[in-house]
Length: 270
Length: 253
Image 1 (cartoon, each protein chain N blue to C red):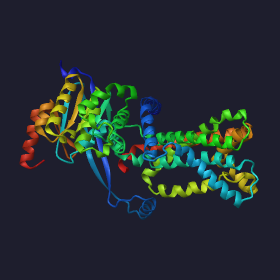
Image 2 (image 1 turned 180 degrees about the vertical axis):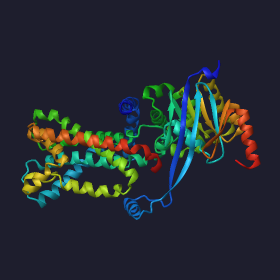
Image 3 (image 1 turned 135 degrees about the vertical axis):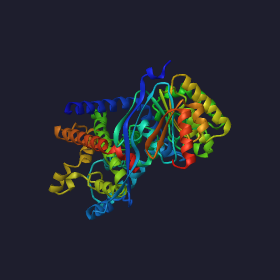
Image 4 (image 1 turned 90 degrees about the horizontal axis):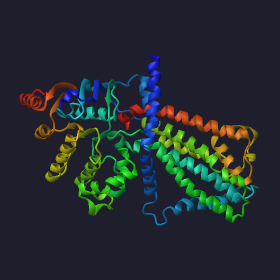
């Protein structure tokens, strides 16, 4: 019995993988749809993905350089690095959150592996973020930031962040089916999270206990990793690597586990 | 060719489907917790299907008949993998083309062209496959002039035509059809029936729900009669349909 159950479980994962291959075109179509719908009828279209972070950075630079007397070198670049990564997290989590309930019509009528929906939302946010990286490059050129070879490794923290976001999106999308309130609550959570992450202030400005607490904020590690590569030209030590890897994979497994547990009854609640 | 020698393609094994009809709809966490603490969270259990078993062999055309609410659509959804049975199991051995609601996968903001690719991907086909079949789909749906119009501007008949054209473009092993032929004008219905007929002679298996007895008799050779979630008849289409209509006339079913 135990063996049979185990076999069934491994069979399920095998089915999951083979499904994934079969449904790669669907992910592509859904991502394409998200991008198309996002900028449909706007005059500038995809340019907004570059323009938006630039304008955001300008506003924040103006406001914050008056408010705090921060002595961060190249503050605009510091800001836009943090913002780009956090915006990706924010967007993918918020879009992933509603991905199941928004696709209720489809889920009720056709068999599709349901994790495709949160996943495709994360991928489309990732694509949007890749456009926004052009804004980061632009800021680097304008501010004449020195180019380090480590910039070539910029994709490593982004990859960790992508895995983390996939986990978050899967967890939230599954829970939201049962508790719609999460939609309203999560906006507050991300706002708090945004302030609790050193995006527009340096971590050194925090009191000691807060700096220790910050070690448990995965977003801090991803952003720190990214800034080190892009701005300061050094590769972070093993602690950052471990923190990034552990947080992203733990989140992914939490997401997979929650989703697998809850997905059977989606149809009765969406 | 004896149908009984063909391999089983659908194996429905003692399937029951239970729904909890919440007496008071609780949706929020607070309400659920409060109710649970008060012990007031009670459900009316409702069985849409009760211990239904049947097998369908390759090449058969089977109709599910019965009154509204007898569990036909639920049965189809279980077969299509959309719902998991509360008890029992349901195995499908082969590829499946579900037509439970045509155009379910359409995004109303996208054009017909974009939706063909999207809906194709929903059914598991990649872009190159859809490229190869694009023209056939458009021709069958008779929508060539409207191909770049957003689907939200389509009439319901146009949406159905497009959905049917996409869903039947592939030759799947099993076709699951839920009353989709009720919409569309007479000409298009005839065209659809002809297409289904052609697929059947090509070895496709059909599971069909319809309230139109003539349609059922024309298309299927076997019928399963569901009554309040229980299987009440299973056999050659004529016999079961006659039994069903007799029971209806007597006012008992």
